[in-house]
Image 1 (cartoon, helix red, strand yellow):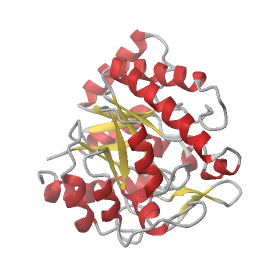
Image 2 (tube, rainbow, N blue to C red):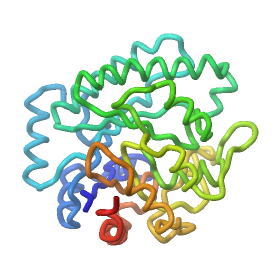
Image 3 (tube, rainbow, N blue to C red):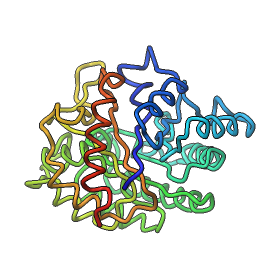
Amino acid sequence: MKKLSIGSWAFTIGPYEKNPVDFDTVCAKCKELNFDAIELGGFPPHPNPNDLPEKEQRTEVVEKMKKYGLEFSGLAANLWNEKLINTDDQSKYIDEFKKNCIFCNDLKIKTIRVDTVQSPTILNEVEYNTAFKRVTETWNTCAGIANDHDLHICWEFEPGFAFNKPSQILRVLDAVNKDNFGILYDTCHGHMVAERGSRQPGEKEIFGSQVELIKKLDGRINHIHLIDSDNTCHKDSDGNDETSMHFPFGEGVKINFDEIMPELAKQKLPHDYWTMDLCFWPNAWEATANCKLFLDSLNKKYGSFS
């Protein structure tokens, strides 16, 4: 059976940005619902490297997690304020990444998440090959830093970020050919990328099922997020498509988990976690309990699958 986790960012960003749920309350709720872990969104007001600069402060977080009987399944590093594609100097991004790797070590976290930071429209400003080189060379450097800190990196591809076509995803993976670098496969993003071609520039690359994409990524997936989709994107403040809308299980188009889970369950992850992601869902707090029941059912059915 897998250890089940939930992303804490669901309660701090988007609809919760102005009224976030504090970390202790999230921990208590997760304990009540029998989660095994929390996936930490490393930005305020939850624990993050800037607010907790001292080792002693970080040790207190580790002890708090022990008190609740919880682990950390990973860190979503706050790199969104950095530039990755539209600059020829990625040193600030790399420095921030290293700072988050140290934070991971102090909190006993073994996996760190990244994305390409900027939207697919950035490729209208930066020539494709230049953008590709900047991303892959930077991530090769970051993979080396992560390896020095005994960490795995998972790249979460999304409609809302550059390099969101299947062929582009595979090309990036080939260019960052490090043992500790892999794909964070989110079922919502997988659906929107593979079956809808959402926010893909130019001609869309789509399949009949996201299973085809999972098979192309076989052996290169090192982290998994599970959630439903309703075929739409979350909207930004101007009403424009941003990235996949994460719908509670059963409330979207009802992704066929019986079709995709056998493929995902056989992936050889470097850990035993499956993480539920309710990012941007306006009632994530209220939806968590029912979603956990659905996640439990997936775990019962596929958690021991190989």
